[in-house]
Image (cartoon, rainbow, N blue to C red):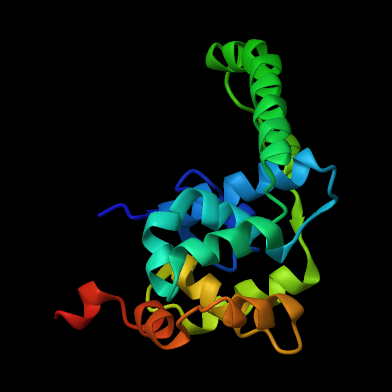
Length: 201
């Protein structure tokens, strides 16, 4: 089952720096987070950006970990700075960017991607902030699923693992606010560490 994102076309040298893989749901949430961060001119992807991406993309699944999902949504819109005005601006910006890139996409269909193209695309991706790197590293340590990359075992990150580690960041104001918003850490930790489909076996 192809439930996480994986690039089989990368050469071993290009895969040497891979520290983790991600589920498809997490990858889509991360893409949204990137676009939100870019819309405000950020140089780094922050924890709040990723939380916003997860909220926008996967709320139907993640909302069940809050005692009062409606109240939690108000909190998340505030902490992730998603006001109606910002959302409208982001959608306009995203739509404009997509149309500007359309001719480039058409040209890509008719020519092969070169190593320099791949390098340029990698450079466009925002780097994770130090705090977000710590969250992702912690999520990798508790991830229940793993994959292989050049003889190494690497974790597969899920939204649940990452959300749990966001809420458990030491001395983090965002972590305190997540817990105060009614996040049920017990249920979230159980699902993050021992997903239902593994518990049924």
